[in-house]
Image: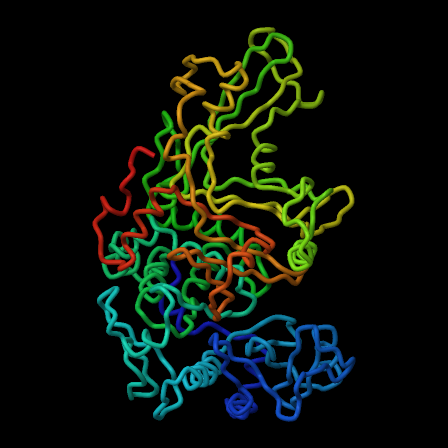
Length: 557
């Protein structure tokens, strides 16, 4: 892609927001300054004077998402916001009461404007006890030297507060920083939070293995996703706690994924796959070809790549054909027939009922389903080399090699081509914080198939049922991406596990939560790391600059 970096500085807002600013400038933003309230967790919400609970002016509902018009200050719920625009010409821009984000009623989508963001951030700083001296523009000034913690947050040209003072007011671990929603971009923010706190990726970028100042693509003025991620890692670990806007990365990703370049809500899993593919391509690697199971050495594959084994067995003669396929994540089927919704689980927990039920879907059940032997249908007969003709067969998947980072994707969205319908499965899934993947390895699966006998088989080594679990098969969870709401209008949130504590990352807002909250969420993507990777990460909490050898200490995994 030959687009110039200078294009990033002028991301076009929606036409309705442009028209509003042409007519009213930023006076409308400033008029809401007295209505913004900063809460203890750093959230900025709109608090209307004389109203304890804001309600929709059309239906008086208060449980739904509410919006206040920038022009007439009329409040509308999500069901009537479009009606308000249709009845009042030009009243296209509103503010989300709960989240203090701009919303275009005509586009039915969130929109981002840096000048509005300045007003909200200024109010947030004041609410957190940081004095705002003068000026109208809030900008984050970062030193050219990466990972320096002496950056200053200023308004206009005067200093607000030093990073040391900011860190005294925040007890969160270094690296925890909110990400502004740029217009239905919670799908992106959720994945970025998980990737930023993945130890191998964090070590790779903070150790300067992809330095944007030395990148040849950047020096030629070309777009480079790894460079944009380098900026994000530096910003997240700079010590600054004010929410960061990943606009450059969004724009760069759009240029590489033009079919997804829209302000509409996207799927977090699709973004995750697309982002890793783009990183692989931008690092100058050609199509990843696996020869003798040797993988590509880019950061994407070194961190997330594993190897699946597929055995297709003829049901007549018993001969087996084996193939290997690389993977960077595993998609698991969620059985919703006997599943419980998260609301049911919360009801059971608060009413004293059992928290575990035999019919409740579990992660181990999903992995068992993924690795079970499946009989192929009559229309899927394969040519058996031993029989010399097409025969019915069975297929079984197993994991030949585990990655450093294991991403498990829970398939919550179903699309029926015959019925032409789509739906979301909101069943609760029980998952462990510590996961042993030994039962799903090829050695275990094939050993069970042959009665757990000790033998050597086709490059898998020897299987011994009495041997202890391999240390590399023990994983610990470090991030959970969740999806709440409906298929068309859902919201993504990430829970991060740092220093043994859980933190909820909801776009710009971060707060500490109890373990029970995480267990009761609608998990969509589960991120696990090998146990020894997590243990090493705990020893590097200072996030010092490290060598490449330290970034990937387990080359034999």
